[in-house]
Image 1 (cartoon, rainbow, N blue to C red):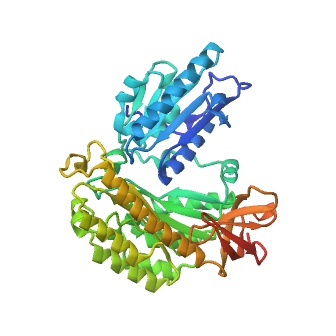
Image 2: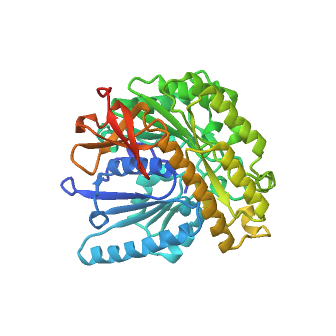
Image 3: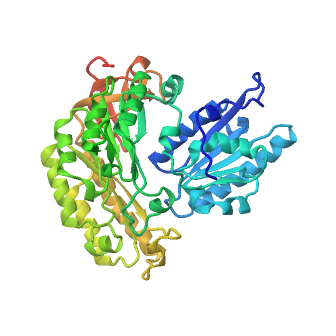
Length: 470
């Protein structure tokens, strides 16, 4: 399908009685981009007259927004769909309908196979086409098995309605803002170029306008996100390309925004201007997530990463020179095809040199259609599991050491929600650590100076030492 819709096309259907309350539940799997997409899908559902469902049993519309980055992602979705088919049968017997939608990267990768394996699904829509969801839902009312996994020519983001003030307030003081989508790097293990398409950057003005709306709704921290966010090259009002460093400065200048973050980055796009932004932009958090994947140049070349260990370490050195308190995190893949014991030891050596504040490590999992899936030298599961455990132990030791070093420090914490106990509030430090403190509910949604008094296995305990600033 290639027919486009306008906001007028997305108005609630005239076939729905005004007194009838329909409810939608959007379940998100995977990355930060999927969380952002799920919120925008919920905005589209609201235009169709759907209120938010608290439980799947109450939903007239269920959307699974899927991720395809890890092994068995598809099977997890089909397992979920099996349960939803039973729910659909039960609701039908009770005289109620439910529309099942599979969206996101599994939808893009699997397409018609989803309908073949689970005929209860009504709509399959890829991540580049979900702005067409109102039209697709109407199509599903008259025919079964609607699929849209095209890469449409129109700009998806310009077709999405803005989030309502109520939705923004409900989602809290921290918000993701998609600024770039897709990837042109073609790392040999990654499906993103095939499921999200080529790199596309949104215009600066559209992004700033979205951030202004978020700030007016109570958002105080924005994370600029993209599959390769520091490759951002959107145009300004005069048609000139702007790099991520310039976009960060524009976001930080929005009234009400107290903190800016970005993720996820590629080392090859970590320019001097972006490093300088960490030095010069006060609102930019001193935190850099910079995936390295391996500490072996041989493995990096096989991965088509196009950076070296020396180049990566040089970025780390320059970032710390620009912002001495910057915290670093990374992604690692162990057991990549052909990875030797020496290659793995090189990864351990790199991690020991950098000393990360937090990181994520995964066993390599073949993704169908990627070059790495067909490579010789696939590493056995037992070896992968052993290597992963050793690397994770080192990274966890580093994380705990970073947290312990926070005791006695003072920094601003943006409180996001109430804690488990009465009188407790929870937020995040500039370094992405979870922090809880005693404080009134009024501090939720605000930033306050906090002194860290203790560090537990998973969070920091703080004491609010200054009034909250809004």
